[in-house]
Length: 377
Image (cartoon, rainbow, N blue to C red):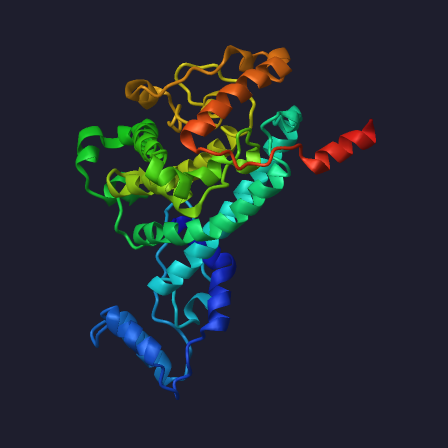
């Protein structure tokens, strides 16, 4: 995330912090800057500190911070604003605030972008007529997401800050870090990190997700996401904040255990958001015994206690929780038939009684869509 942070610093944050928290003039005492400098370990023999002190003596308002590119592959040269705030780019509080804003905004942008594209080009609108589709469901999905993302961002930011401050095994070049796995695989790790990331996170999420279905946990944390029996792409991030964060922990844990390239980290983090939308889009294109795609995840939303995996069916098969998607889901003329919906509804109602007890959902079509169809007709 240091690469992303450098880009945002150059584009907006440097100027923002320079205006909100400017360095005080030499004639005034600034305890915050003094304490910050002390905690950073600046001393009389430090060149940067001496330069800053000399600048202060001359009345110049300039930080002692020194620019070091986050990556050799992408650099954004800082403007003068980068040296004009008492919170320079290396300040932990500034990094925390900046990363929170980035995480929140990035989460919202990719959610609305991917979910909207999926809704327009992929999602089958006949789903609105399914007997287990909730009244005004999309509106509720979006509302829950908007409430959850800023809270999930709070839980996520500490991992990003720790990574930015050099406490993980994220690297720009293999020679930058020392790790036993790099000694074993060398440059091949640049390719092997991708399948290992998928296997590691898939394994961890399987057990976390399965744990969220424990009776003592389910109703408190995971039930809000299972409110959507027939989800739309906008249900992809509609979680209880602790539920959503808990299932993201393996993604953040991986680079603190294994080496991970900076740009692989960004690419995988983006892929995860897109994949989360894809498994909720209701388009069953992959009838694969290996990939835990939208069809498998539909089985999970319909019947609750199956297909906990995120990417593959491996751990569900080993854990005895795999359920093969109904063949009808892959046949366009049958997946939206009343007979198939009736079978799904009857079994789903039995599972709801077993897992939740009373079904407190309010079913009905998406009103806006229904009105639009009636008007066209």
